Each structure stands twice: as C-alpha cells, then as structure tokens.
Length: 457
Image 1 (cartoon, rainbow, N blue to C red):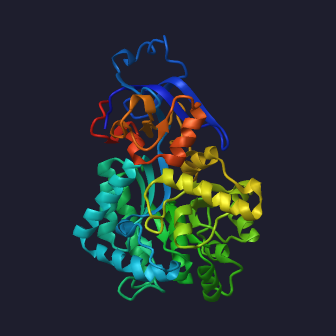
Image 2 (cartoon, helix red, strand yellow):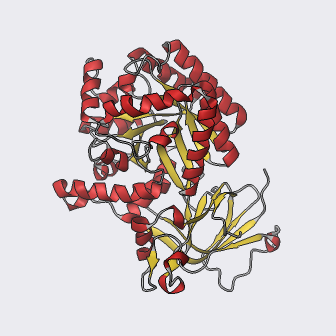
C-alpha cells in the first residue's frame, strides 16, 4: 500500500547505545511512500524541506511543547489468548497457574467467535501502549492461530505469530494428538502466514514449542527439524521457575541442563527467543551465547508469579541479546513501558543482594524495549531507531506542562512537567510515571495504526 510522503517535525528521542540516549530537540524526519525514513535533519528551525522528489508537497506532522517522537516498542513475549486473565494470579506459582487459569482459557479458542473477540482486543490494546511489534503465542488451534495473523495484518501491527505445540503435561483436552499432528498443524500455520505476507513485511510465523516440560524429546526434535526446514523465528520458555527447572531435570535426566535440552533438539539457534531465563546457570549462559539465542526478560510476570529475579546485568555483561516481554497474562499489563519500569525495579532488588552494579539505568531499559527487542526478533536492520532506511515504526509521546494544564482534566496522562526538567529528566519521568494516556499516536511502517480521538495529523 502506497503511503503519503510525510515530514515529522519536533523533538525525537532514541537510544544511541545501550547506555546513551540520542536527544534531538528540533528535528525533522522525512518518511517516504514505502514507510521508510528517507532523511533525518537534526535542526529544523529555519531549514527548508529537502528540494526535489516532492517533499515540498509532503504532509506535515508536528509535535509541540514537551512531547517527542520515540521508536515503537517491541514486545518479545506475549500470550495473546491469555489477555482476559491479565491480573489474575491467585495464590499459585507457575505450574499450578497454568492448570488453573491458562489451559482452560486457551482451550476455548476452538471457538473462532471467542478467538476473534479476544484477539481484536489484545492487538488494539498493545498498539495503544505504543507496541509496534509483538511476538505472539497463540493456541494449538490452527484456525484461531491463522485468525490472529489476519487480525494483526488488518490492524497494521508488525507481528510474529506462533501455534503452540505440546504433547504432555497438559490436560488431555488441550494437547497435540501426536508429534506428527503437531508438526503438520504448525506447518499449516506457517504456510498460511506466508501466504498472506509472502515477504514477511509485516507478519511472520514462529515455531513455538510451549516449553520443555510439556514437550517430549521427540516433539522437540521434530520442531527443531521444522525450524531448520523453514528458517522461521522460534520461541519458547526457559528456567522461569525453580520447580520447573527441577521438572526438566527429572524429565530429561540424560541432558546436562535446560538449555542443553533445546540445544540437543536443534532449537537453540540464533533464531530462538528464550523467555524468562531467571535461573540460568553459568554454563547455560555460555551455551546460549555460543548459539546466539536471544533472551526475553519479563520482569512483571516473574514478580507476579514469584518466579524469581532475572540477573539482566550478568546477561548483558556476558554478551547476550536481551529484549523485554510483557508475558501477558503472567504479566498484568500489555505495556512495554511498564516492563521497562519493572525491569528497573527488579534490577534494584537484585542489587540489594549482589551490589550496586546490578542496577539497570533508564537508558538501558529503553534500549531493551526498542533496539534490544529488534535484535531479539532479528529485525535490527529494519526497526528500533530513526536511521535512514529503517521503517517508521514510531510513537508520539505527549507530555503536559503543569502551567499549560492548571486543571487535572486538561493534562495528557499522569506525567507532570514543571518546566525546569532537562530532556533526560522528562524521559525519566515518562518511564517511571507514564502510561498509555501519554501515547498520542502510533505508526507502523509509516501507517497510522492508533491515535487519540483528538489527534489531528
């Protein structure tokens, strides 16, 4: 779909490196008809638009006051069918929680009516929080999984969509009939996603073994073969909960570690996204690094289900690639901004036991939410920042000065700017106190996919 040339004028902020923000107070970014960034000017005052190529006729989108453009967030781990259970943890830990809340809900997606209602809601909600890319787990139902891909495409969200595979340690009413059936149905979903988006411009398939305890060794090996055959992204869970780790040792006594289970099956590759990684051993960290597998840090979920505190500083120091995941519904919110905040808090709890250096900075948490996430899903050349040639996956963040909004109902969201804050401090306030009310508009590949009712592009 051809778009209109558009020039975005105002402040833009992105992560320059893991520890540094790039803040441009008066920038100008041109996005062409393909949704790619054509030029970036770092000072727009007094500057004419670039000559030629129709930029004089381009549409203009301006941001004023304390607002800024920021790259779209990337959710590297979210269970789309579990959204109705967000905020429901009971008094359980991981394995009990799956049986109490997760499996019964996911089984209901045999009904496309149920699936359509929930999938429309979760995709709309993630977009409203500035998430331009999401790595989704669906269910084991082929029609419902394909429906999720359709909904992501129709709403314009960049997405990876995976049919969940499991052949044991799940209810009889909700598991694959056989390894052969799981591979057949997964291949059907992969082929469908590629049929609606042959170039994977927006939607791509992902091979999805739920996690080692619910998959036999034969299942994992067959999915490893499918991964090699198709070249898809892959996603699963690892070392989320102590009891889960014990269970893996019991189920796979011949393997050296949880990570070795996946490695032996041919799943631990540069295409694999491993969620949680809370209780990795040093040997597993070395193995994951050697295979260039990626990590999705899900801090809100790990806290809610009392799984543990992932040591992200050690992972980063070891050279692992890390992004953020909401892990809805283990995580209570589909907001990656909230995960950036939770990642900061979890790192501080780790620091209380392991020293000050364990703490993450705001800049680091935002890097995980954008450029880090882009690397996790293999799209670092296309999204995550505002360089020429990248897709315009972006959000407009609105912040209100207290003087401009004397009454609370005049304020854009909960962030309060008093005017003396530096740009870095405004970003910090946004991370610690902001929410989706501060997300004014969201673009994916240059297409406006979400905006507040009063937004006038």
